[in-house]
Picture 1 (cartoon, rainbow, N blue to C red):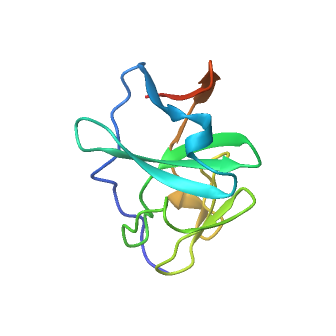
Picture 2: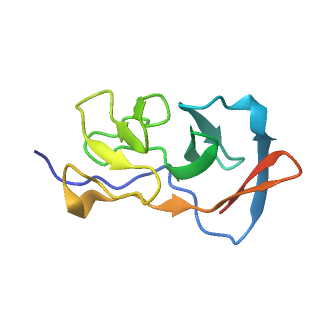
Length: 115
């Protein structure tokens, strides 16, 4: 099944709240790549109007998760089918390969992510 790879594009924790986009910019059932100024990335998802943010990196082979298939709160990596819960970052395929999550806040119609 493969080992867990380290994410070279994983944002460093800075305790900063970043304004990302207006709520209406990300439709329900979709994901989007959020590229930060330092080149790191977060995958942002809209699950029935609730927003979740995780690492944008499948630890199996490094695929970007934001563009993969979202089934409720489960994202299925489009490269090899690994499954992750976007609300917890938990890997359902290989438990030791879970992803880091980032807190998402909605303020005045804006999506904000705490990194």
